[in-house]
Amino acid sequence: MGLVIDLGAIQANWKALSALAPTARAGAVVKADAYGLGAEKVAPALYEAGARDFFVALASEGRCIRPLLPEDATIFVLSGAMEGEDLTGLVPLLNSPAQFFRYRTLSPRAPFGIQLDSGMNRLGIEPGEWNAIRAEALAAGPLLVMSHLACADEPQHPANAQQLAAFRAMTDGIGVSRSLAATGGILLGPDYHFDLVRPGVGQYGGAPFADGKPVVTLSLPVIQTREVKPGESVGYSFTWTAKRPSRVATVAAGYADGLARALMGKADLQLWAGDVPCPVIGRISMDLITVDVTDLPMVPAELEVLNARQGVDALAEHGGTIGYEILTSLGHRYTRTYL
Ligand SMILES: *Cc1c(COP(=O)(O)O)cnc(C)c1O
Image (cartoon, rainbow, N blue to C red; front, side, top):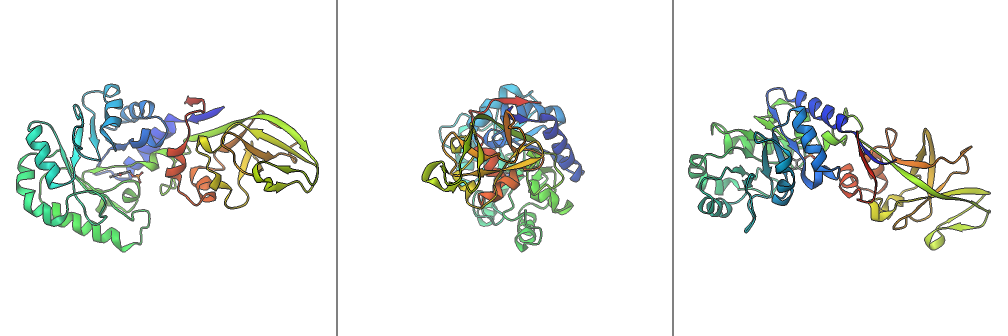
């Protein structure tokens, strides 16, 4: 019932990703509330599985999980040290020379890491800047020097090798822990693993980690069922009209719960009654979705939108998006159960 999150599957996926990079430590990316699944439950479960290096996007996210993790867990903040931010107990990944100097002046004894730009041009210290501050930055003792790949989900993309070469040119021989690979980078092989890998979406059963166990089941309660005569229409703007005597179930979730209207952009979005797919019909409303259940012998109490047959990536395809976005959009009105 509702959103069921399998913490055991998350742990198994983390261990499987960790085993793919046997020469590196595996960290765990739990930003955006552990990709929408609940960092307060997921981070301790990943600690239990063996993770000791956690990554969040924002200091506020780090502060939420800091009390839940033992002292020997390090929490890295990917956005670095933004002005006025309380970073007690957290380790910012400083991403510009200005940020480095400001943070070091403000908190000379606080631990920090360095984020380099190896070509993605999103966040991080650029090669020329790094040349200028490298000696001083390394003398200050960073815990980690990392960078991020732009195209790791496309193994053949030439940017992967280019970014690898750029990262090596900036970091070979520095004698500090290095990290380049997220889920996609782990799958690119050992050249990309360095000392620490940073799996995110693969832990949660998403592509590009094809061998992951499914983590999320989402079932929606059927509120009402009705008979619709041929020629009658259903939902906003009457986009669906019955061609035969039909039975329509209305379930309690909609775009306010992360099931975007755009999921109806392409035909044949299904909800599932066990093994049986049932087409979603009409518009997705804020709180309601209508489903054609005419072919079911009996209408169940709930219909599934995410299950082993329709995972986050399959659902994402309907709306022209990615599994990451489906996960991080999962709403807060579902009852959440953790296995
Ligand atoms: C989000 C993120 C990750 C995790 O990426 P996945 O593709 O989800 O594995 C790792 N490193 C950085 C810098 C990120 O922003």
